[in-house]
Image (tube, rainbow, N blue to C red; front, side):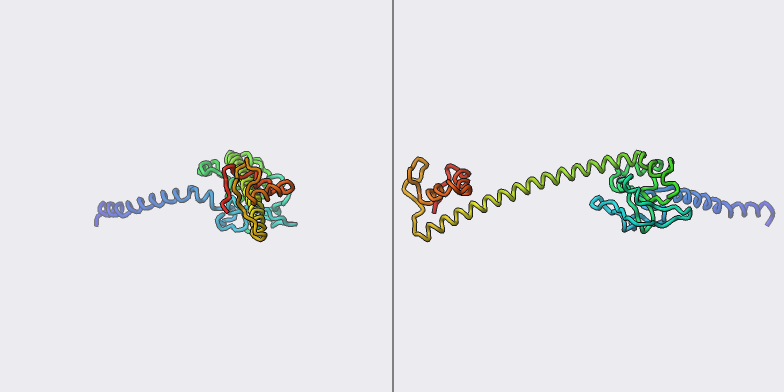
Length: 249
């Protein structure tokens, strides 16, 4: 094989290698770029948030705020402090990952903001850089001033307001229903006891003239009218009943 043929052969062999290298490099760039799932699920402790079982898993759970006399120290001999709970109400802490999380941002974000790489922050994934806890660029105060946190806080407060409003309405309805059931039960007991008295004494319950203009209506009605002077339940039976109601006994 002459020198020219050898060079052509070498070029042909190297061409696909260069193509594969370019393709691999392109794939590496794709995989190295952070995706939504890596922003939302990965934590600074390399433990997926979905696997962190000692913090809130849904809006139905309160923020996890374990109080300990001491917390694990990092390599800089800094650690989490329970006093931070009172200052940052959104804060929750995982003993499993030794990381802090934002309750609002985890459960009440719109999702649109978190998809923006520039808006994502460590308090969704898990924050454990305690020496930077109050840093102006990446600490608690910095997170609290981000747009994603502010919107999440608004969503949380609206959720709480809706929940309280719904609960209050249901409580009022339920209370009114219970009171109505109680009053109707008392009326029914009074009616049944009056009928029982008439039956035991062999007193006819119906009369010849039962209209309101009658001076002597049926015995059943007259007994209730007599009892109504001292018994509010008997009075309510007469007052609350429909004027056109008749008792076919």
